[in-house]
Length: 381
Image 1 (spheres, rainbow, N blue to C red):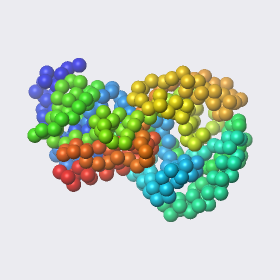
Image 2 (image 1 turned 180 degrees about the vertical axis):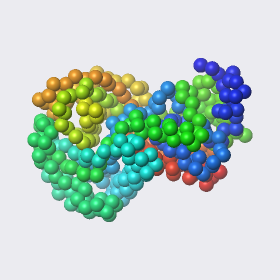
Image 3 (image 1 turned 30 degrees about the vertical axis):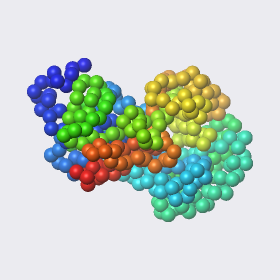
């Protein structure tokens, strides 16, 4: 690949000279940060770097769930983090989804509000009963945030409705939906181009050093910038060694098209460690990180036989027990997680900032994280 020092005068002038804001990562947070910096700095030179020929993180590899919290997740998080933290996080996710819609448009990202279901197996009847008791309280809290009544409901007809096996019942969320991830990423890229924001793919940022100007060392040479924003989520540990952020790999498979597939909506299974949906008359099914949490704490974009085998078994035994299917494709994406589910948005050092650790909720949180990060940079500049 051509080294930065060997680019032409025109290339250096347009892309590399006088960079004001250099954003590492062309995902939801990276583009949102760049777009909001442009709104506040109309004449600034803004450059986004992406190490892959496509975005390398979760933004282009997630399942496209527009979700903010299933009952089993809420119950577990309240035990782990407390009431205040949980409802603040839910509110932020809901605000983030609204902001994503307003920024890009519902039709642009193919937003569909088909509801979601939190599935409980027959062996978890006791757990189902305990969470069912919490549904009125959860609805009270959601009404305070959204103004909507009865967001959650109990649905024991789920197996009959969709043909699932070994499911005792479910909790329905009527406000959650789904998007087309590729359309969202394309919309972000097009908006960046319209706003005269440059994006360079295939350039990997390796190290950030400070001096009179910030120097980002890359696989094609050094790039100078006044300010640097780290927006690489699960890949951020290389720049933020002391911060509480770890990569979390999510493996996904998708079937070939299935005739008369009547499953509709988004589905969470076994505390959200598994999730699936219908996309283009296929079942997209991901998860299984709980089978090998240590092994899945990695940035390797690879799949494993252990997890793909489990996903295939659950497809056959639970989701599509009476429907023939073929697996068409598999892949993996990398999330950023930590001890809490609150994103890290901060000044790292002079002229270096970060917006990372979205905890698997990038669709809901990413746009707002970028906006907040841009405001932090603007105030400090």
